[in-house]
Length: 342
Image 1 (cartoon, rainbow, N blue to C red):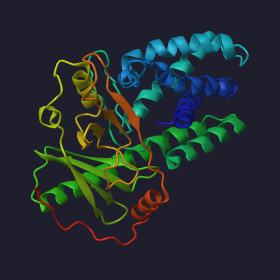
Image 2 (image 1 turned 90 degrees about the vertical axis):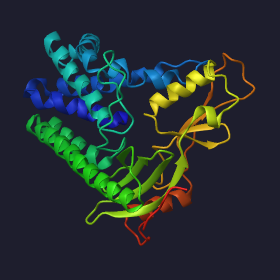
Image 3 (image 1 turned 120 degrees about the horizontal axis):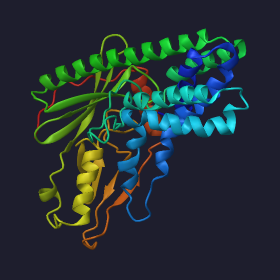
């Protein structure tokens, strides 16, 4: 999630365990430690544009790395801040480890994918229960955290922990409702999906992006699950088949290996939306559209050892924002009646 939320949750858990005299120190140390795992974004390469995709949410986000990350953060933060905040080294280590531990688990609740079991597994865990930015989750946590600081009372943070668990549980419930609507939609279209996922859209738990896969296509729709589920029409795109879509590509080239890397990062939700662009169909601002936020571009004239190019796109146009708002607020739009493969 965003750094602010990671810091707030990272501070909340240690504060909930602290006594009055250590509460400020627990909040500061835990908050900083809670943001630290995202320092992996600094791992980049000027020659390999996909390197950061492999390392972000990798070893620093592994459950096995939590004790190491907590100890390193705790030791450094103790000498920088902990002594001034009247914490013992043991307390600094404890509060830092608690703060650090919240980070990967919260990231796994989003849609991006987190390598919780690295190095034992390269599976990207994405539980799809909360948007990567959600003020409805963050602001109550922040208010309770600040109240706890002012009152020097850990009960406010304890309420914050309860709030976080309840909100994420509600997200899981809403995800199940959205996916149930997605399966009904696919059945109405005469499809038997290979897999289907629902992902929360920006800053809410009632408008969801549906993505499901058939033998030939990816289908993208939106569903609003505030009250009776309402499904909105979407797009479809043919699945990537490297040999068919890029017949000129040397399968032993670096670009072919980069396609495989991007395929892993995108959990297989990849398609060609332009002659030489491979995109991640899971993300778009308007949930029933396929307007990818990122992807890779191949070059037919590149050398065998040349990497692909990586691109990002953000459609923040007034039209896109208006379309998102229409779906978010449930304004009239005819639900999908049915669709079949062509």
